[in-house]
Image (tube, rainbow, N blue to C red; front, top):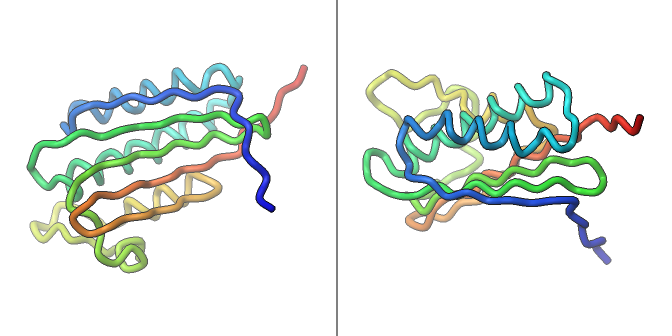
Length: 149
């Protein structure tokens, strides 16, 4: 039987999928994490991963159309930070292919196809679920160092 995760705290925010809100997402996740007394490296890692996930929603999920991004943040009693970035955009037909380094659907040449690779580099686990035409959820999990002093 799977153990139910206990959350120390959680919050969520919804904002328009506009490029200027990428910095909002970074600031919000940073502020939320402060209660766990994370290291500067942990904050930087998660801000970078969140930035990539939000940018993917804006550039690929909505591709110039309007929509909202939901960001859910949770801190578990076990010391995990869990960040979900959710859009209701076009979705991803082949998640495995999309997560391949250097793969991009952006044909104008200004994208490197490294967004998911960056997310995976800065988190302990990155999980992507998506349905074509219905949207995408990116779950970022990072174990935070515990400072019980």
